[in-house]
Length: 243
Image 1: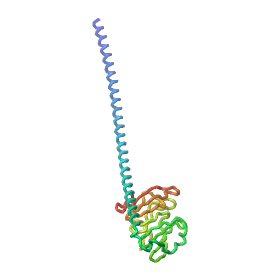
Image 2: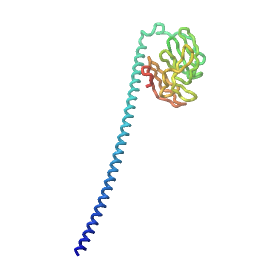
Image 3: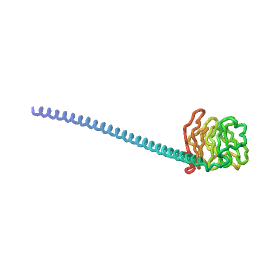
Image 4: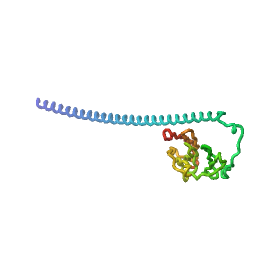
């Protein structure tokens, strides 16, 4: 009886031990699963933090670029305002032109209609029109009271301007595709050549070009075909860059 009882007790102990081992294995498996989930959550959190840092950096860079652009525009607007105030002072106008108009030589026949754009360098006025022969540029000598025609620029549909006493074309269209290149006219060779000014960041045809001191602003224009652009970009000689 004692042996039988002892055998039953051993069997029961063995059964309990087996159950405890199984339970321990189950608990260990659950702990491993929980650890794996914690690692996965930690990895996701770290990835999310990295993405947030990248986005914050992008926002910071965009905000900085926008601030620089706004500052450049404000500075240019202030310079234009000062120039306008300076040019409206009566002592800058000679008595000859204050109260009367003086007749000059008539425009060339090709410019009788359209919307001429003009640039003045020294005592020479350069005129370009948007109709008839839109890529022709004519120059008028105030001293000689005569008109002449320049060689055609390297691209058409350009914006007309000047920088440092050189006539320049900004942007334009090449076979229907807007470009941002800048070309200058060489008075000695009487030829157009690439300007040291880099291309505009936004290629456009027919931009409005404004020059003040050593800065050139390109406003608006057409991107391709009839699509209009609201871009305003300023080239500053002090940085040799568009802003």
